[in-house]
Image 1 (cartoon, rainbow, N blue to C red):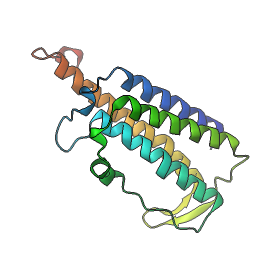
Image 2: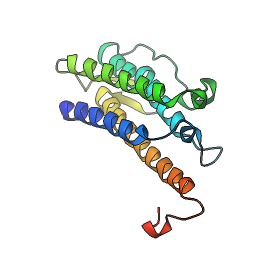
Image 3: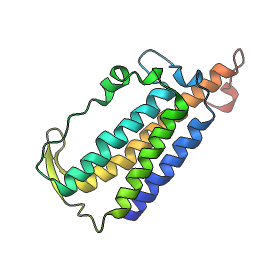
Length: 170
């Protein structure tokens, strides 16, 4: 695994998230395509909490505290229990970006991390630090895709009664 390339990807992903969300208005940010979907605001706050309470923390546990029990998380439940959709987009985005910078600084401070360090995950089984870093990078991409889908939906709302269908099928 190319540790430096993963750090660069995390930096780029943070910037892409900022760019995608930057022009979304406060009211638009709360719109959900359906009751089961997340809004832009919910995605951004999920990324913020995952940055500080999941990926960075668990990567640290794998590298420096193997065998110690990980603190519990509830990413899906936090969406409602932490009232993500009642927050402000600008401050939520800044919170995520600040946490990403903390993560990048922390990753840069690691000298030759042993990505082979592992623990036994109750679902995934043998789980290496390298697996966690790979998941961290991929998690961003999953939510970048989600944010793009939300932006496409918001454009459809913006141009009503007209349709963007001539652009092609989504």
